[in-house]
Amino acid sequence: MRKATAIVTRTGVVIVLAIFAAAALYPILFMFLTSFKTSVQYTNDPLALPPGFAYIQNFVAMFNSFNVPGLLLNTITYIALAAIISLTVSIPAAYALAKLRFPLRNLFFITIIASMVIPAITYIIPDYVLMSNLDLVDTLWSVVLLWATTSVPGSIFLLTSLMRGLPNDILEATRVDGANYLQLMIRIVIPISAPGIITITIFNVTSWWNDLLIPLVFLQSDVNKTLTVAVATIVGRYNTDYPLLLTGLFMASLPPILIYIFLQRYIRRGLVIGAIK
Image (cartoon, rainbow, N blue to C red; front, side, top):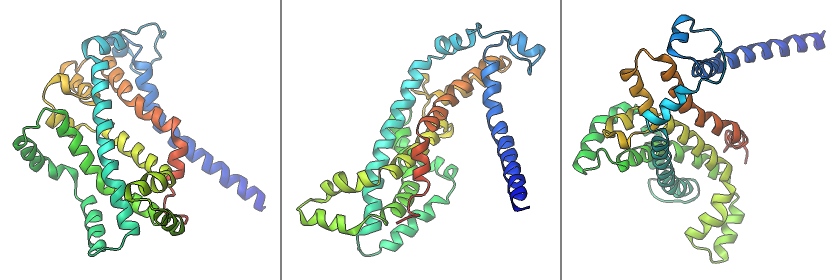
């Protein structure tokens, strides 16, 4: 009886998970199939399968008309710089909050947590005024600095939980051997915390890749825009050419999907950061 109940329960769980997986994969599959259709074919039957996969004019149009390589290079450059700045600030700060004793430490940590609950949209006007006064509007640094700073609180919060589990014996032995703070970070803290650091970086990168608001507001020249912003402009310029629009959406969503597929083992390990000491 128990075995039969377990089988029924397992089957039910598998069915529910399969439904959720199908619901998540259907939009991606729909975009992929539609990208091989002409506008006329899509208008006649949006849900029909494409007659073949030889029609690649939508992809050609995206590369030629919207300069996808340049937009992709912009996006990767902005994300790389933001990730470097974010980790450079977050890792030492998290270690200090986790292992060092100093006045008002708990107040700093509570303030960081409190800043995470404030909606990012409320910062847009003050951020624009600040970037305008610094003459950084329509430059890469406006997006890079805003991405990096908005990701720091969450990164510090998660890394602090991870670094509280670092073995004190190893840290003390490294200090006794004469290692300074920078050497301690490079030799001990970062290698041991690597799974959590990689996981946080993956989450930040995918969030930045999908971000539309900040690049749309602060990047005004087409040459400086990100791929996500360029795809959004297709809606306004080609609002009737849905195959072209869905091709752009598929191309924009593909990199985060590949990141999750190839780095999922780091995500699984990082999701339990701070849970086991």
